[in-house]
Length: 97
Image 1 (tube, one colour):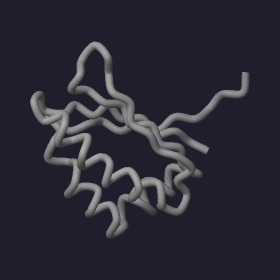
Image 2: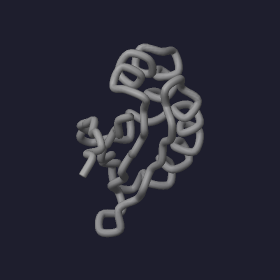
Image 3: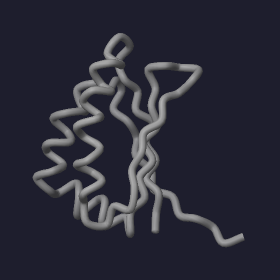
């Protein structure tokens, strides 16, 4: 299992519109094969910054499964025009301590 992490820098003044679009977009990612969960948190210090955390079975489930799907095109149409700059997406794995 891996965790996708992306800080979403929404253009200031568009937060309410972004959140409305996000309400439509989250069910899209959550229904993907290999997606275990997805949530978005809002930053307290910078109200136009959001954090996407999604748990996937594998990087391939995200990169090849979701990103190459028609659902991703819908996700992109709903959300990508809000970002400035475009977010960097990183994948993390849990350490067994």
